[in-house]
Length: 411
Image (cartoon, rainbow, N blue to C red; front, top):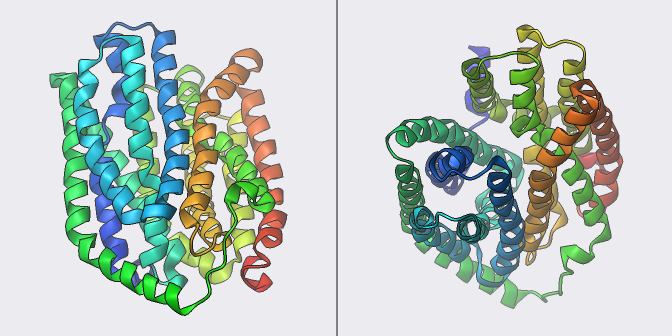
């Protein structure tokens, strides 16, 4: 009963808007079936070479970088409501157009365009979370949103596997339907709320003297922080590239068992995230939480260098999930704390770019190290790098946020 009370209490106090943002994210991500099957679609259906398929996929990462920058910039100019609405609705025709392009150049172009449009959603969504969440609940609001993302990504690939067996075109049309449904629900719920919030913000601006806020791209402390966020993402994103190769080639797991472990990670995050975030907020400071979370992620990879029995793999994945819970939501909170009232979109966009760059770099660097030096070197190196990043976070966060919040909250 005590555990049930702790779990349910972690959801209390969140605003209605925070819940609806999570619902919209769940619908949108549950409809995201294209990316996991895009490589198979290109090789099996369009008969691209593996090399050319990888090149086309890289355009998704490039579009993600551009979309994060563009989304952050225009969010500060026209507001997060319009950016999220346009992003969701413009994604619909772009998804429907993908099957029309059957050459490497054509598909790379439409994937780039679709990625740019869809990724403008992220910084705007982050701004909306900070806008509608109570100040004391910002991290839990980000966690609720991440929980929706993980749940959506658990549902999406499962549905995608069923639909792709019937027709690959169904994947793209289902993605379009998911984006359309998410967009209509978002507009229906937030249209009036955005107007009220805009009027309130306008009155506040008229009542106070507006100071010009600097660009995050000229914020030296924040740039250092984003650099280490990028390094952390490079370590963490092994989950989506080299870790599955390690499971198959070294640990000799079947594709079914690999699916079980990845499914277990999604289930564990949905089950534990809100409670563990609440525990961290109650007992740890921001710098300590980031230190512990990053160390756990590094240790989860390093232990694979010494053993890969199935029990070790499950323990490693469990530690990785807890480490993820104690880092990723708090990175968004720290970014929100560093930003000002009128440049949150730009700050969220820049932090998103650091992850987009890591998404491009990680598959190449990870597979290169594994192929030339072996997985043992890769896992130990990842653990060592994560430990350095953890210590860096511990000192950078108080140094960066000292001007914004009291030192007691961050040390």
